[in-house]
Image (cartoon, rainbow, N blue to C red):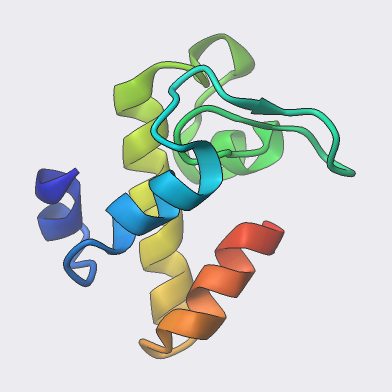
Length: 96
């Protein structure tokens, strides 16, 4: 996780906090109670995993691919909201 935070220039412990919040570090986590199901460490939707990282549903539980995709999405949200961590985390959580 620390390596991904460095690679994507994320604030220290930001990715770790997202993964803890989203899945409690469970790479097999599934949220099928939400309007759109989400999977793995970063609780990625199938559409987000595909569009941001070209990860199909068969690889969505791969902890390395899912973690890297979560880092990429969080980095995108931080850039989108000009570093505002609260807005970025809210957008990440909403999948927008």
